[in-house]
Amino acid sequence: MHELLLFASVPVHQHHGLLQQLAGLTAMQPRHALERRLIFKAFRKPGLITGRVGGSQDLQQASAGDLQRVNKMLNGGMFYTQVVGPVSENDFAPKSATVSAPDADAQMAGMDDVKPSAPAQSDVTHVYDYDQQTWKLEFRDIPEAATRSAITTRVMASAALPRGDIEPSMNAWGYGFVTEYLVEGDVFIHNDIVIFLHRVLHYPTSEKEPREPRRSLPSLNKMAPLEKTGSYVLQASITVQDGSNQETMKTASQHLLGLREQLKSAVRLEPADRLSLDTRAK
Amino acid sequence: MAPLTSEEYKVLEQSRQRLVQLTRSLGSLVSSLEQGDPLPPWSSLQSQASIISNNLISVTEHLSDHRDLLSSIVAYPGPEYPGRTQEAMLQQLLRTKLDPRVEDWVARGRTAGTESSHPALDFSRTIPNPSTAANTTAKQLSESELKDLWEWAPIEANQEARQRNWGGNYTLEEREAGIQNVVTGLRRQLEDDDASEDEEEDEEDDGEDEMEIVGVHRKSGGGLEFDIAPHHARAVHPVVPLDKILRYMTTGHMP
Image (tube, rainbow over all chains, first blue to last red; front, top):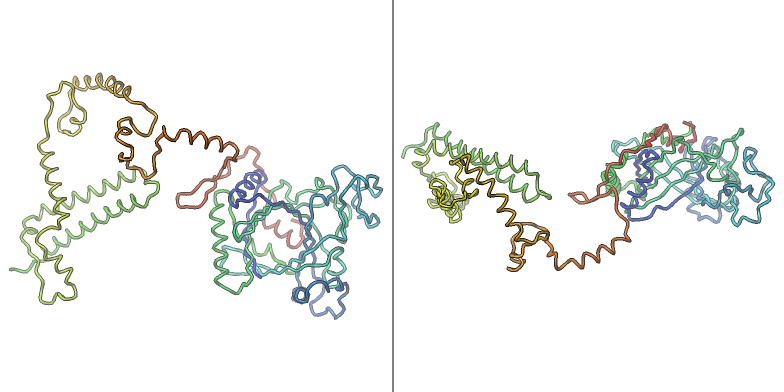
């Protein structure tokens, strides 16, 4: 599959207005989205992976086609890849409560804001369960160095992953955990264009960087935006199933350019710097 | 019949070029009136009109300068003219009478010309009629006449205004004669206010629940257009550039 993209930087003071303009343009209410994104990096040369694929038992539920696709994706080269898990606001610790996840022994050392002794567990109806977290592997290639430079185009593929602790599986495939962050934003659908107005949130900093994905989530208001002023990124994308079909690719890019024209006086949608989306691991 | 000299050819060619220019500028005015939605600003119409009138002047000057030649030459087909294939064109060229429509225009032009050269000098009325004065540009109003006019006009206008019920799209006279007969010259349909007042009130009531649309309006060419984001008092511009954010999102490298 191919993905065609345009980006724009949205200062925080423009965020509210732009949300309303997009709601008017797309005739839909914004769909709020929170995503955990885990970054993994390939650490072995492809080809060194032997037949031993630990932790793939869970994958048997996934269709054979998915499995094949994942294997192909993972063995194709040395890439950064993302594991995306949708979460909801309820998954985050309440503002003032001192609640821990059920498996308190796996508490991260750095999460000092969450005390392990959780007295108020009974009051809380919803607790984030890391073992039930759904994940999706999102592979993105480096954008094509195309002459059609008005739009960023790249090969993409996604596959469903087993629930729960994903790290052992990823390790077995030759991927090491790098870091994780949270993406917070709103999704709009405009014909075939997915508009995602989002920003990156950091988990509260601690002395020790965690070596594995978090098992519990801090309170949402303790998350700090990566961009200190709180600015947002506007991403408009179209996914094309058959990227080799020039006709569909052309139609899709025309639609994106049409959107750029419509939003011209509000934001400037532009193709991204190709190297900033470079997923190759060196 | 002597063939034309090169000088005479030149004259013909020049008249052709001037006529082409004239039709071109007329065509552009017509198309801007037909296609421009909303109509082009008056200043551009004005400049187009002045271009056309300049073209007209140059055509008329040229025609009258070479009147002798142009009225004496006759068109006839040469032996090599493809009379079979270009018959329509040939007929057109050999016409001696004008097209009936064109004849009409010419007649109208002639009457207009004779009228303006013998303006109806109607000063029998004690109060000078401004429209007559405007038509007879040759005669300027004298000081006292101007003064009279200024004294007369406000009172007369006020009286005229009192006779009418202002605030509607149609006058009483027009309504009595039937509003469907009124030629407004407008494309949009004017509402008859008396009839539609109740409806409008209903619409207003309905409108209260709806959200106001802010910052978006229809573009003339179709589609939507957004207002440029208003200047914000607390404008904070991002410190981290977009590509650094994207790089972090891709590889986890802190900017």
